[in-house]
Length: 497
Ligand code: BES
Ligand code: MN
Ligand code: ZN
Image (cartoon, rainbow, N blue to C red):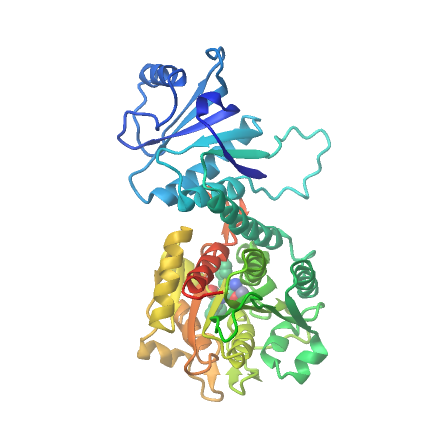
């Protein structure tokens, strides 16, 4: 997909599909339609009794265009009165899918207001994300499926905004592709290989620990979770260090930690068949980490970024970890296993201990951690569990810009905390069903070193979609990649590189 700035008014642009946004309640199609196209569009609007209401659109074929006009079709799309930038991102994605269905592979977008960096970025994101499909396993023999849209132009788009939007979206698309791969293809070992290949491609530092190194490094929690699988676990640490740092300058240091379960069968506490479906998506956090690291390498912010994940497959077998087991995590704390299906937090115990040793200014973990977070917030809002007020605010601000919804959850319920007390170990790995997402977050907190700003994002509700909506296609969303990149950018803004 090529997203580019188009110079000039739409009447002189050659395009098969001109997307014209109309603001809700406005009778006017957006500015700059031009003397020749305007009356045609106006006539069709009247003829169709088109009322500018959110969600409405009108396709206007221009079969015999006036002299000099080279627009094949006009697609009027109505924007709501809500957040303008979010709306542009989602509606653009939908129009790209519509163009594809119409077998139109090239389109041009006209914004109602003068494009600036933020709106151009959002439209570019929408274009790339909306064109995403995961179809590599569908045989093409005699397949009538339309080809993806190849080019999206933005009239007078802001160049910097467009190129940033493309990088942000491509980073997310990379993560989506990896999440969508099934567990018979992507294993802990291939996850580590992908990390290594990413590091080579972008000049990042990369460390991969295999099972014998994991033993030596006291990563017993990650090893325990991976014990029942035929494929051994891996631990991955990628690092990006800004090069253009003036002498004596100190850049912010951030660690992004992902949950990387390439499959979660539940282990001996095995899931039902229905709940097992989509569990290839339990590696979303780790895939997000890889997407973020690619984005960081391309955007080169003045921030040191560490991408960390433990990859394992949670399976039942003679060697699998069991309820009643007690495992010692890297930071020395012991975990009593109550339920092998609460495995994500066990792997994260080691990853967060490791991340803490780097003493970064902030740690953000991102994990498809609990079904109860999905129950609490639904499928379009992730849970933000704040371990630090400033960090939580920065993340909320970044989420506003990236358009990824999240909601702050409480972490101060001392009665609930009793649910993760164990009579035989330092902490218990399950908790109660009520408030399960909070119990999980509290569990994680005990593996973050005192004094380090930390936040946990539970993305169990938002990681996979059955239907296409806005920027989300069918399958993996890779929710959080752009949010993390926006957060990193906000840190870089206060720093001189
Ligand atoms: N990977 C699941 C959480 C999940 C559920 C992600 C649905 C995406 C969609 C996690 O490992 C899990 O199984 N959690 C249990 C915890 C319980 C056993 C304490 C859950 O949420 O039921
Ligand atoms: Mn589980
Ligand atoms: Zn899981």
